[in-house]
Image (cartoon, rainbow, N blue to C red):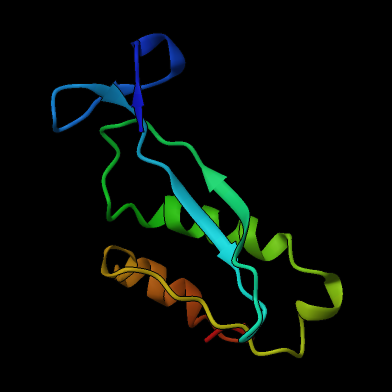
Length: 101
């Protein structure tokens, strides 16, 4: 996302502009799901794509938006692009006693 100045907590991007590198999370409730946005983390334009801490924060924000009845005992699938495939993020997902796939 391009911002028009650095006053908006933006940072220089690799394309020599100012902007943000957001992470977003959407919830899809099966075949008829709406794909509604539930979380977004607005990061500076120079933020790395493999920052596990940012991906964990975004996932936590998204999971916190699920109804309480869906947080435990349900199988929750988290899908990401390959940039999220860092060891730290995958280890967080696979942590013992988690209900995530």
